[in-house]
Image (cartoon, rainbow, N blue to C red; front, side, top):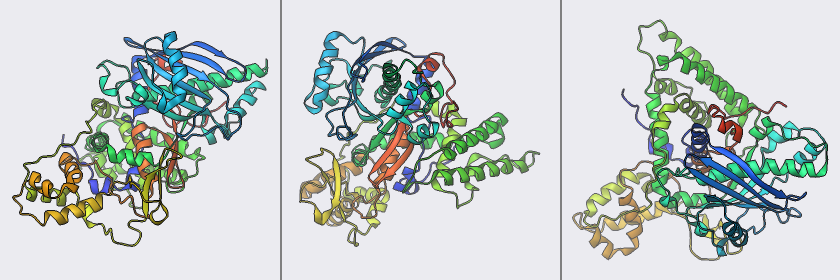
Length: 562
């Protein structure tokens, strides 16, 4: 079978196009859930010693093949919204927790209780995989508790509008605060996949939120009823991400390339398949199109720079109609059966980019064996090596081939250097401001266009046979740029085509790439260009369904019927 070519980096890596990518089976929340379902993990609540206001301690245990993981939770109640923040400067939360390897001993529980609230000054207990924090939803939690305590289910419209009971404010792992390094995980470790530890902690955070709401409701009234399973399944965990993810993308180009390449490879293999290859798969795709259209019709999220739910739903109806008509002329034989690549190429040009990427994601769902056969557990190292013996003529050719887009940008144009990126001392988080309004300091932005153009100018000043080592001895300021250029040579998807200093640059597109395509969050909403909200494990199966090995088709849930 001939595999269709992957998409051009010059097209895919435009920030707006990256932000249009949707979650797939390769996304971390999805791949973890698939693993849990396939292996039928068991999750049990061992202890729930909380008072009527949710203060106290709880313990959950996860049984995976050959492993036991404990999730120890410390519940609090923040008084007043001024204490409740989703920013990293927060020092008090409605709950904080740790995901531990093995059983939670009294010593490790006590160390977690003492150290986690210190954050940067704290030290995780031995065998800690994740430190987690979250707050109750200010818009939904109290409504759910009040409804349950009155003997009724919460208002479905409010459930759909908000989508979560607990809002994540931190999932720290991979060496942070002394947690176990990801590279040290054993080959059979249950959360050895990228970000699987964080996603498991979020899943358990979600379960704790349900138990907490029901517990507080029962403490208020004997009439209290449990939360309906359909609502439990629909709700996820709230999340908000900011400018730090843009800097993360810049700092981990090999990982970005690897994860985008896996997605593009899966899509290319599927597009090479014949549409008429399996009628059951056609019916399945029509079913996914119908489900997603319904899902978007229930979406109450307001999007600013992202495509509206109504537009995507409308476009998917057109795609469905064309799918029914496209294969019809080939049904009687004669002409060669069309491929999915041909179908996608024939779609109307006016369809929104997000609608097209949604269809791509649904295609991957119809051919799960393609994505599942890839290696999602491979993590590319961040280290980039310099090749000192390379002639500068070869380096210059590499620069003009792989960074042609950067060399073409006019960095002297008005507003091309409008923004300055910095770290706030007060808030301990990345910010950006107008360059003429920020106190001079270290600019955290990755200014690839300027770096490439300065390197190009100095390369022209030396003979082509000069070695890179000799060039850098004369121009040491270019060492980092040369290291990135050589270390990423031959990779296609490592660097978004962006000038992040430009006044027109919208960070939310790059933030959404990580949240949606990589992490697997749904209903990712842009806020003031610099923040993206979303929901983790939206519609994910409940623990009893995971233990029973229910089918892995839980995505895009309709509004719960209760």
